[in-house]
Image (cartoon, rainbow, N blue to C red; front, side):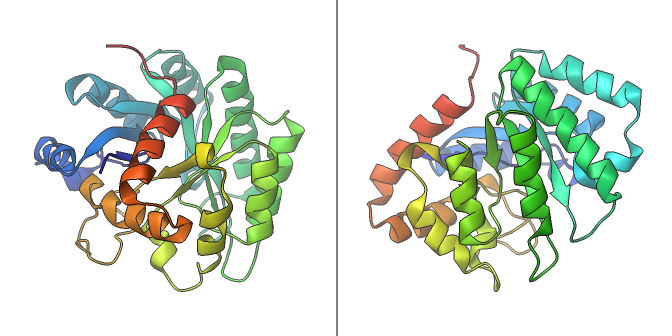
Length: 261
């Protein structure tokens, strides 16, 4: 089965001593594409460096958790990184009203800057979105922000939310990526969403080292375990894993404009 991991943080400390072997294990499991999203300047720079040394893809952005600490110099650095052709996307950015590490107005301003930048450079924006359990205010604010800046290309990473939120996002042209989060209690709507996403806007990810699916190590998720979520997705859509894998690779290459070797 051909596989992709559209969101893996291999640049974090959890992979400091064995990231090359972790990536080799993923390749051995069929993972052909891996994207390392940045979440601040340091991790974005590291992702770009690893795109060369590990032959993976990179993105650059400022996560809502750290938006309140981002300076003008940090933002200038992100803009410079995003201009590099080896950086295939903007982000990870978005809104997180669950943990709320940054004030909402700061998160919204940070999100808008990324959306505008993505539209200007013609690269998709990778979006994190979480509300507190039982709430949907972050999802509603996210869609409103996308609409306000003219609907730039974007990916809802590690999907979480109600079905009508996904329907509206799809109407706006967004892609949707599923992670091991789909197996958790409270995320049952993801199965309905998985069946409704147009086949050309479907992605899977691990969000390594987080969100381990059942059957993967709880200590540290890895790109090779994306197969577990991909198998779940194939089951939801009632297609063979092989057919889904072909589609996932095709989608990845269409959504993220990758530099030719």
